[in-house]
Image 1 (cartoon, rainbow over the protein chains, first blue to last red):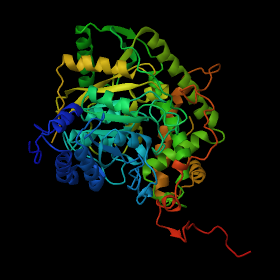
Image 2: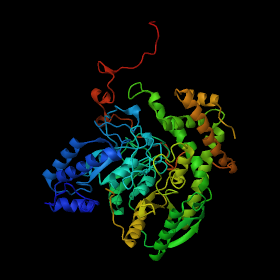
Image 3: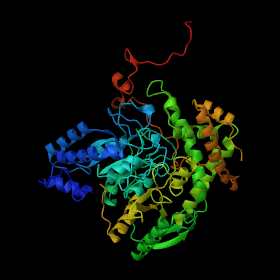
Length: 468
Length: 101
């Protein structure tokens, strides 16, 4: 048997296929996989602050069940999975990375958690994030910042900071996050991973602590596009507990694609290296006969102001339930960012300001949606940066909330419009940090985005890798 | 565009059921003013005949049958599992009445 203990990044399995082939060929047992992952978690977690709760007992229990049957024949059999700590997990502490919920033990599990575990995954634990998913760096966690495994002086991105860092550190094979304004795509980008923000109404939000109910989506992290497709097919579909979720059939995969690039993306504030990366990606797509089409999304610059009106308004309502009367601590335990967003939301909804802010933002949101509808009449997908810059240093943006909000400039519009977007890793910056891009498609086009992403990764001979 | 005063911030804090320290009041007054000022860009757009968007799925009034789903029911212990503050199988909550009636 292959000795998985003391695994280096040369022999830890980085794909679902590799994991399951190893299990089926009896190269290693599921319990040995758990040994190896837990060893890595225990070794690196004190320094990188990625896991908030480690579910060792549950992991071994599941692994022993898998080994007893010995078939490993479900889509995620033997796949180690971990969850952003806003996913409810039955009998396992769930904090939303906020001290308000420091001692909260849920009575049921989120649908996504249940689906993943029913598909054979091994649960390793709960992951750090910006408290209540408010942030773009992980630094708003009440349990301390998560560090980027590629360079611990830098942020891993946020708000699903731990979900991205766990994979980059080789502590878990797949993870769940959420994407309300970029919270999956941006950390995926900062940690050299594939990240998906699905179409609204494809994956159930049941059991995910709500942030902004007209834009929240369940996000997924993997190392490869193939693995993302497996995860997506496991997660999608109605559960009867989320009224916006509808089943849909996998669409016909296109042979030929037209890819749009919007001139509005190349404005002041876009880092030179990110701009050059997009140019390189465009050339690669052209070289594999993907037609590039210039498009216009004229309301792009309004996405951040719309987002920071609508999202805090919905936050102020969703966080109203945390009154400390039955569950959790009292509202004095909210961190600064939660307080800022709750008050901002109350302000834009309050008498005298509702029309000027909330109603106005909802109307400009309509214009933004029209932009994308027009674009998707001409193209099958849109190529865009994810973050305007490579990963930034811990502490660099914490004193200026507005500057941190502008981090969402390429991501928030996608949530407001509702369409899917696939973030893809491609290269490292001059400073040695990951940068990547996103492919945005019309509603329910996930499988076509996977096809495009796969063709790109084949062309650049992409190989998944971990930092530690 | 209007700047927020400390009075505005205290007002929204009260609407939000939040208590602020003096330092927080200073900080949030500055930060929220800057953020709200940034929203003024939206006034450049004429939205007179544009309908507001509140959701993107287009679905309306999705309801399930009004039936008891026994597999989703929580036991008393499960319902209380999220808190330590219980008494005789019930939640213990702060009292709302000052005097006995």
